[in-house]
Figure 1 (cartoon, helix red, strand yellow):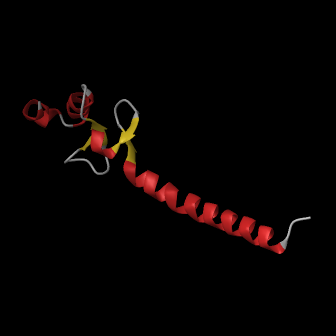
Figure 2: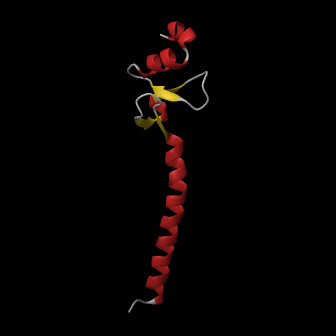
Length: 81
């Protein structure tokens, strides 16, 4: 049978892990975003935020930014390449 000290330690570990899971989800959500073109989930540092769209990100590398501007903002696509 487990002692009261062991049970208290297990409860404390369980509470700590629950708190960590609760906060870590929000931290991870702030650090990651999906590209609106290819759908790849990346660090926000590797994505570009569209200056004309609300909450739209696309990859810095590759052609995702050009594809987004051609499809959504054709009048400014020429100036953003």
